Length: 84
Image (cartoon, rainbow, N blue to C red; front, side, top):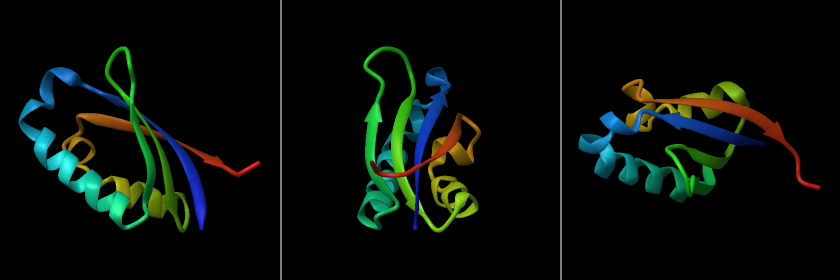
């Protein structure tokens, strides 16, 4: 299992109608162990996640289930990480 630090940049002006579905899918991903931690930036739009997946492609597919990503409202940058 690989772990990724994921940074998400979002177009906050367009996400309003999709927030409830985004939170539902995020909760599903947390329950499945794909998303280990999720943080919203304190200032400005964006998120930081710790995600678990088989590999980068699997992480991209899994997080692609998020409506913001699927609709092109959020872009994600994946960095593989290891525990210290």
